Length: 219
Image 1 (spheres, rainbow, N blue to C red):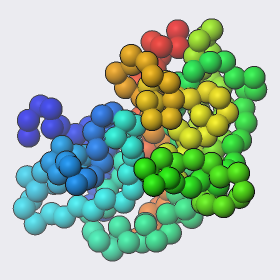
Image 2: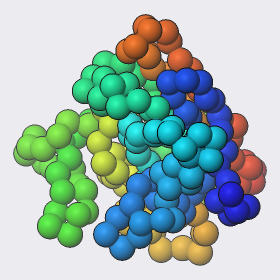
Image 3: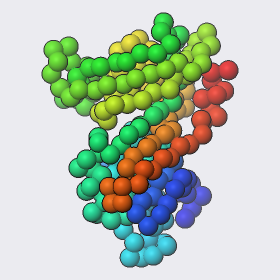
């Protein structure tokens, strides 16, 4: 495996594989890109270990979001996880650096998300769409940015990004929902995942370190 195709393995057993996805990498293929994806890297890794190995995507992160992504090694586990994801997942936590200083140290954003024809997610004012709930807590602020610890109670597309925009504090480096700036990445990182393995009932907990770039920005 080439150096730029390596994967950062957080955990692996006979059932699952958890990796720390870098920012700027698609989770799965699109019409325009088939090989420069996290799935392709994991597939290559698993096949090199044993050509009969299989791997299945369970959930995904946006291209510009880094952090924990879980893969299943059997189709049965994949289906069990996807069919009951909201109940099996007990915690999904993110770190985000947002623009500005928040008025409140913690809060909850609830809205109903819809999507435009150009695939832009937005909060509906009439209660129509998919319900999304985001909780946040301010960890640290300077006079320009705030580091937030974010917990999502629902896993909607672009949920955190839209909700941060809604409260007037878009994520740093989010060109889609935020401000145009010169940052090389979007400052959103999925750092904690806690869930129940539906095969054996065991509780699994995974966590990654705070990216050093987040710490530098919030000094």
